[in-house]
Image (tube, rainbow over all chains, first blue to last red; front, top):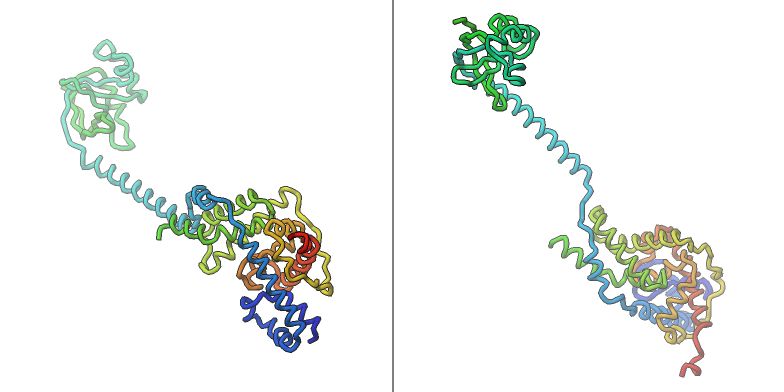
Length: 207
Length: 171
């Protein structure tokens, strides 16, 4: 190593901060044996310290930290694995709840069905609800409508109206059409859906 | 410690260093403040991704530098000039030239140095960072960083010695 090589290396030497950096060791050792280089190095370090102190002495704008803190966004960690876990949990929970509700509904429909006997006039529900038509004058129309599949009902003596249905998948319209506008006694299972009374027909007796 | 308090402490700890780094890069107080704010804003959104707490300072400086480069590209003022200082031309610097320059003159001269060279030089002067840490922050090989610092330092010292008034006139 000569003085020129040592200077090139020591140009980057900043003092104690670089003492542990092995790239400077040989050049520093060389400088110890060269008074002129040693003096040059002393001036370099002093110059470095001066420039550093002046640059570090620059004061930031007043109020800057407060502005930064105020402008801080609400952190939302985009941890996609956690988001996926949460979404899966919601889907599983919703599916489980839906299955439970469905099961509960069916169970309730069977368990809640009460067998009753109702006596009253067989109605063509479409004409009755829409136009308040019933009775012997409307018998023919009611028979045709019920036979053609329009909903049928029975108006009990207390005034309550039930929608008449058959077993699931079985229509009782053909049978009921024969009693359109007539007073009959029907035994069946009563249930209510959304406040609407229905009677699942088991037996029809003409009075 | 709450996240808010943690954030405030982080700001207190590093806003000054980041601001000075930003000011040395841009030469403009408003731009430096904007860069500092933007850096902490990004930290608030993405800082949780950093696994190693010891590298927070490096992360912040890297982020500020990246944001600065983005700003340069947007403003189309990115300098491609290289510093034409040969290593053979080691300056014979008057010992008091740095003492006679105030921080404004230093910032002005830094602003005249090409950006590629300015950032490593500023980190070299202002932060207690090893050369490896500077290289990590700037995403450059160690040899490139040292070469750029050396060339930029020569240019800075040469301009300083040319810029300063003689001692007799100052007095």
